[in-house]
Image (cartoon, rainbow, N blue to C red; front, side, top):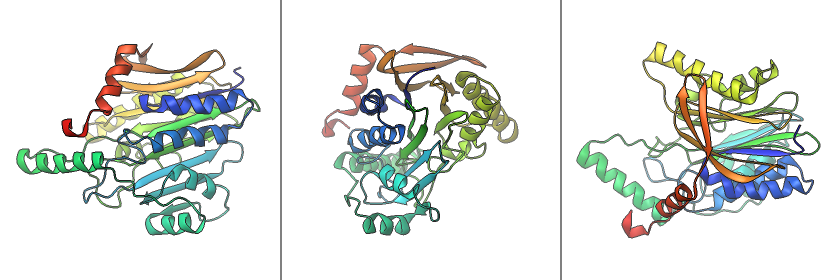
Length: 320
């Protein structure tokens, strides 16, 4: 059993995981660790699918979704379609302390944020606006699909007292319809955590993930005795096959999982990157590749991969 551990979706999470790991290894609580870790991702303008700098909807508005869950009490807080407020994960966590009205959307979420003193900020950057303008041009000139990009940052943590927490944050599907909400703030679909079993969180095409409640399903499989890797991969592949059978196709789906011993695993039907840390392993990025129905190859991301990623997201505005 590990004294503490964290796992998160995507390369963009590793700096946040490092901050969360510092909290946990110094005896801090998992709730604080996952919130602080996600704030780090939300605040970084070069990550185009979360928080400040997130890609806008069809009318060039940045609408953000976020959620927070406490595995000890099963308390949940969530916001969706919130505009012009910094760190939606913090708003979600505050909502989780309430008995009623724990999931707020749009103007209601914004009014709550204002009343409770959260920071108001224009979340649309010049980089994101230019990316939106280029996509609009491509849609008109090349008849391309508008939709691209739906990488949610998800965090799961366990602390030295064996409490667990999970949180998510995203700007959602690029060029989405105004008011569209994916799986990320929806309990059981985008996230779920229970001290008695473990936690799971999902990233990918929310419209497909919501059809299967994959995070809750993954936690239930761990509760029945599966390892995090077995639970996550079997849940993803079983449901992907159901989607293909019933609808002819399945979108990109990846799930991170951690049991209440601090052991982690992932499930995916695509290539996927994630970050993790525990007392024996410093925060690092891993790359996952599907090599068989129930087999995922995991390797540590190379320095070359990390540098290429950095250069790509930080390329000068004129090169976009």
